[in-house]
Length: 444
Image (cartoon, rainbow, N blue to C red; front, top):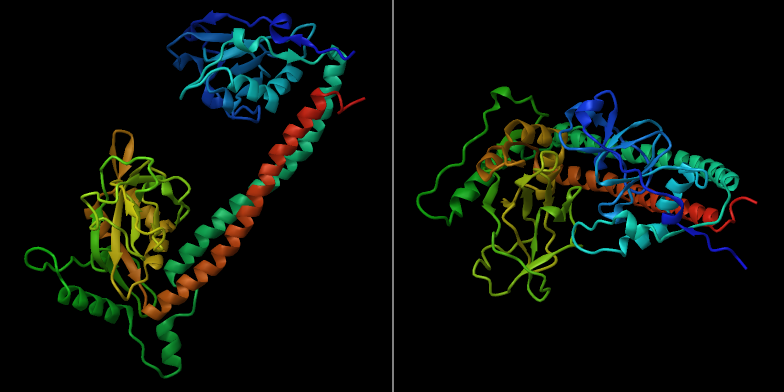
């Protein structure tokens, strides 16, 4: 009959050595943020001298297991002495269990599922008494070490592949940024004015296009009160543009600039979907997570989106504020929340081109220069957005720029999708290795 193994609590007793960090200023401090979820990797550490609350003492060879949010599976095999957050359960190795073996056992999918099932809530926690009933396989210490050696050999090969994929992923991100930069500098497609001049043809320049947009804007004004001419950009500190381009503010090329609804949304999908800041991802709209307002909401139809509306995220973390995307007309009807600003771009200017500029290195630099901080959140209000200066090419050149950017980024997206698929596959392979190891099928 196959031996089932022994309960964790029968083999190991947790180390409960509480200390005052200030007295151990020479030792590193490991917080939950320093252990990467799912990978058993240490991301860094802090100085114990900076910690004010009590901490747990651990020693080289111990296993640190995070009892908070067990689904994140933050577990680390200590390669040094130190102090750690009280949210870690410290498990010392002994004559029955190797620390590296224990670390991998707690990293395996079946243990994660077991620990995650013990408690519910937004911030679930487990304690040692709860996980102590988990069975450890009946391997001798020498068998455990042979298993660990084989696991780490296979993980090393996997890690090489994962590292290569992540390098390509980073290169694609840089390439995406380079494409947008070139597009906004006039280096991505042939210059419209120069091309037409060589052929002896006339073309509407960016300056003439802007003049036409402003005339149409004035002519079709339906706002309250007397029409006020939008402010032109101050070009004294702006770089020189390609031939036929001109500078224009977002206010000059927009018919409407307004905040979204601050009304409380719900989960009723029979209502009108409301786009929020999380729905803007990498310059596109992601509809996988939606909230709704009733169809008879009193801000409709004024706050319903139209195809081509540009959405700007006005409040977010410093690195995410200002992300922008264009609404394509579906789903319809559709609205937007108050942390977003809707700009309806005038005919003669491509919303996608404006979005590319805001998402480019130039747009990000502008956002960094004018952002304000409010209780940990960065903010760029509607007035600032309207003052943003955009380099405006002739309309025909805008169209070719948008087509070329879309062509290049579609290839990037295909490659990114393939990389994501392979990274997920690597994660599954990692778990498959652990499963074979603890079933006794990895080494003989």
